[in-house]
Length: 134
Image (tube, rainbow, N blue to C red; front, top):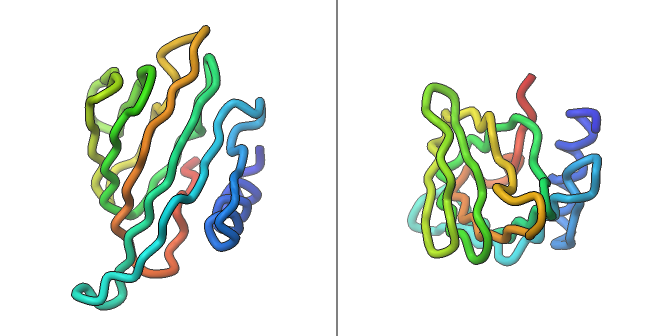
């Protein structure tokens, strides 16, 4: 999927509070759950999303320019940010990405079972949720 199209679709989905497939093979789905301005932090907002990858599903290389807190609900996801090793995060475990991290790997650890996780993003108000990186 074209990176500009991916950015546009994700941003539009968050604005419309719908569900979106973010992978060309229709295996990654992002569902916005909650968006809230943070009055004690002017210009900042919190966003909670649910992410599901089907068996073998993944996301393209991207960044969030946000503090991203991940909690895996079911299955396991393989994560890697630039400069760090790949890690497998299983149900009940957490993961963190900083605003400067480039997310190189985000894929379902299983080819037979889905993975579902929650992401809480603390970001600049109105900033894109995900930005593709080439």
